[in-house]
Amino acid sequence: MRLLLNLISEKDCVYDLSYFNKIQGLIYNLLENSIYRKIHDKPGYKFFCFSNIFPIGNLKENDSRNLLISSPDGAFIKLLKNRIEEKDSIGIGEMQFHIDKIKILNPVLRKNSRLISATPIVIRIPERNYEKYKIPEEYRKRRYIFWRPCYSFEAFVKQLEENLIKKYNEFHKTEIEMERIFEVFKFIKGPIANHVLIDGREQLFIGSLWEFHFSYLTKEQKKILNFALDCGFGERNSFGFGFVNIL
Picture (cartoon, rainbow, N blue to C red):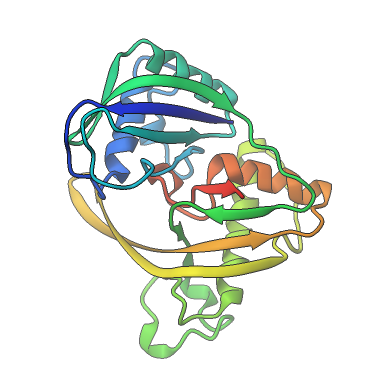
């Protein structure tokens, strides 16, 4: 389930490229005094994602912008909708917006679908898989490395599939397994470096942009991918990474 916010800029402003933790902070503030109030402290997956503020570009007063927030938890999205409807405006860093419209969306996957990442997909390769994916010695680091296009595409896709299955099973309390989720994938751009402020410390995340093509989605694939569209692809979804749209 997704929440679409149509926003109107209240002033001239430079577009804030460091929006990740600011939109996350806005969401956490909206969840105060609710059953989700402790989600910030929850270890592991938070099960929500969000887009960038689009279209991207510096703002003039009365410019129109949009923001999407997604989650496989329908109650989470409905609560955010109710909380936002109580407000006339919201602030994201220095950007201030009047809330024009807000509505819930439910994207529908067709059997032959194309998906595109709107924000970078972050994938880490754990140290235990360096040999498996033939990571060159000079790139190896302790614990993990971020996937970059100089590594094999197999490493990206396999780690992405493992991540989606793990999140799906944790959320639904299941133990499903799948050999393959993705059919045809197209690398668009990367590596994309993003610096995110977490608990007062700047951290670096490396991501990439992709297209995914499907000629015939099985029932099982659709189930996983519908979940992924709501939850986000890859890691650090609660910072807005891995937000994917249907083309």
